[in-house]
Length: 581
Image (cartoon, rainbow, N blue to C red):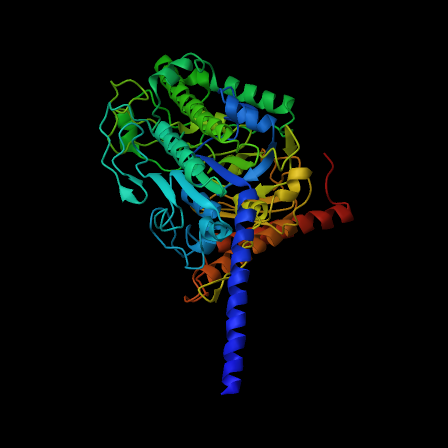
């Protein structure tokens, strides 16, 4: 009996101590939470690398330019070439293929709710909220599930991507809202910023002692090209010029500001939209052009039409910047700007797509109005992705290169500097976790969580340096690429590999695959090895053995030819059989 009393006494002491410890722990957590930085992650939709003024563009983006002037600009930052894979990466920290949110060879993956993430692939709020963070979402989603289900405390989800003035599908806190009528004064970019400002005001009033993570995902300048009349008017005459001139001017500004030193890529005149809709071209009429033709080969009607489209694209970006300015003003009013890490990027390159969806297109209506459905197209997309090749969906540099601006006065002392180390959207989550003092999840519901592939960018906040990366990898719509160091192997769907030295040729103009067959074969093998590893992780219960894909056989034949050709040249040279030109 005495022994029992002793054990009870010990238990009471331990219990009491645990209560004291919990109290101390919670008070310490509260103190830690109040000092942790806020994070504002801002994502544009289909923005070209050279669209912002601070990346060479002629579009007015004073707020982005101010963030860049007082922070960092990354010159070699990458996305996934498409909207939903990039968004999956931004919220999970994994390649989209690792979490079933983009296709792998022989496997599915896609937008909306197709192919749910594995249960272990949690979103950022699940990692940040135990540290006291509040989590807010405003704008586009394009991730499986709903925002509050994913751990966000507040959300405005603008799901209708085809109607900037009158969306039929949008949600607040995962609850459907009534459809918006035309001519109501609604505009999507403004509504997204309205919600962001509302969340920040409420945070200041009710949760001022807590840090926040805010995911601000604008839907601009994604098609359809819809913009407010006063914003369009500002650019009405700016693009009544040869698009090659606009492109060259952007490139010249990039050179003069020290952003890039690469050549300007040749325009691929025969490369049109990634998907062909001939019936849609008929709707749009003879003024539409689905190839980046020389400007002087366009009719006057076509020139006027194309200039109007670019004016709307610019107006959408201008408005995005204006609305971001309102969010920044709210942060300043809260005295939160200095201790908020702000990162701005785009989900993919500018789009060459041309199509008509949703409410259709009325050729008689004013361009940019709710009655129209216009897309940027390959002519201006080529300009917006200056100086790089190709567009959204492709994994050449034009499809996957994005601006990345990082601004955090309390944590980044550098002002207006460039960071030239290559980075990828897989690095955003580990950077946020590092800044916030969070550790990656090791397990979820008793099951291990695989390590994420990204690297924290925090060391780069102080100086340009290596982050110790083995490779960067891409696969989308059958397009493939892998980058190891400065070497990039890339292949459009169904075509042979191309090899580029990005240290001198980010314009991807000088294919080295023929003269370097061994490196081509080695990188090709590495791409396939990563694809196999991702397949095993994403689909562990399915057989890993897969029938050979047509491109794999072509790759092997191509590699053999390249290898043999290269060594034959060496042998002939050594025997003196090579003619000198």
